[in-house]
Length: 287
Image (cartoon, rainbow, N blue to C red; front, side):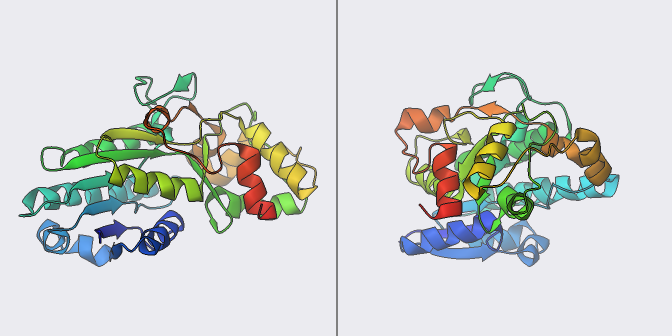
């Protein structure tokens, strides 16, 4: 039996991942805010001797970014990741792997990116991801560190789909901004499978893109979702409207990347929902 400590266990991704790991017979313990507040020594006592630490927690990004909110978004990721890195290195029996989330927002919104891409975004999200990964890599001298660069996660009960589906069902859906920006997605089932896969396979270190191989843009997503719901999906949400609602935070919605999961592909990982139509059919039509 594997023993895993998981932060963000009650969130959209974390709750799905916890259920999958427990179905495999793994023992999953949640890392909560109070545990981080108690400091690295307390975290060390919790995680000493476990097989894996998975860090998914972080403040929500899709909202209006004031300076206070940006600090919250940054600190909720970087400070907690540093605390876990420090705790891991203080362990007597160190965890075998530290899986610390990152995001495809680390890449520029032009070109096609695999894990070797050096075209990293210099905006708030790009720098946030760089700091996030650097904080996790502080533990690389003590254990294997994996940084899953997670794309847009599709699921019925959270993430992008939960926010947009009500509008699409009313025929009020459509592309965001130009619609030409990359839409690097992954079904929640495949994301959980990929996270478990990198824990079990010691070849994985550093960044791992967690998106499907198919590259589509935002307009393709909107139109595919509209077709499945038998609803029009042509009401473009202009960038100025996104900025009016989200302020600077609109950049997270208006920009997108084209990303290849090169490491997962070369390792032989099999996606259950490798194409957009497969993912949406499962989520909308239960196919």
